[in-house]
Length: 279
Length: 168
Image (cartoon, each protein chain N blue to C red):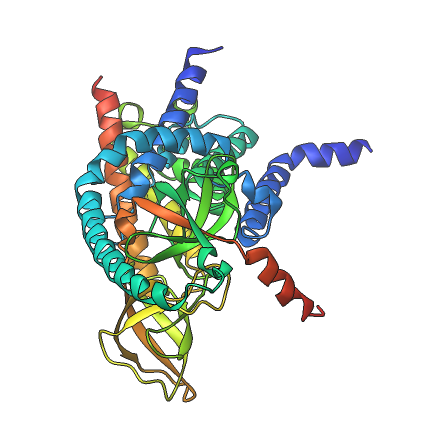
């Protein structure tokens, strides 16, 4: 017993070292599906306090650019509202007896500000200032005024961590606008404005400059939200699929205000999907 | 509480905040990052108990991880760095009793030896951090460029801070 104690004391530094390295490796490898990771993410109480205070100051620096983008998107939306209103008035004459379609109110938005952001890692995350008390749940989609930016990952009470589109572990289902050619959008960890649409069928038709939008196959994003534009085809060794190079619509270095998408049918659709699986 | 203990706690908090709020957002030429928080490990006295150095290193890394959403990455690299700090220090300094109690710095080591020491520490850290983070990539040259640029950035910032403290 005494020898054992002596041994432990003599080599205690090695034990301490191994212990810390083990903990770090567990965090490193299992960072996404680990309960403990909630406490070591920026969505915890300390991170919340620090980043909400700092963003109160730094938010002012980007106001000019944010304002300009908002004005642009406002103008676009206004013209869209006018068009839709015109169309609606035409249809209202035709459809006075029909019941309102519940699907029309399927998606809702929760506005939020980005309070911490990174683009330099291979797996990037950012933090927003809305959390579970505002109705945010893991798995919800996040968009900004230009397009898709990420998916909620961990929620704190008043903050949430979002997996950025610039995260090589996260794939997004996307398609060429106006077609049915669906692929998987992946970021490869280099330029924060370039991503790749993989597994596109060989016979897909596209032009450089075509818009890439969400496919609407998951409950995370509704169909047709902008992601980016096609820059060209990438050479691959695989003959069955195409890989397209995509210029992303959102500027990830200056994320300011975002919206979290709430799908009223999410629970229903997910429960239907899980019936079919026997795993 | 000893006066120097308080100043070390102060240094810890300031460096972690500086890293999370400022340095994480500065990426020069798309590759150079400044890991200024390792200045805390650089400044720890050489004769401090090894277990305490390891613990402080781990906590330092974990605090930075918490605020930058890189769970485990900096904790792992800081623990390894904490274990290498002593051998690196004595590679450039003589084993004499006078120097054992001091905090490494320009004032105590002289500019040349401090430069060698701080540069080695930065290089070890940057190589570790980039290799652990980009482990899946085969682009070794890209990792080396990033690590090299970050080493230089971290080293120069550290030198600037230390010379400011020394002048005072």
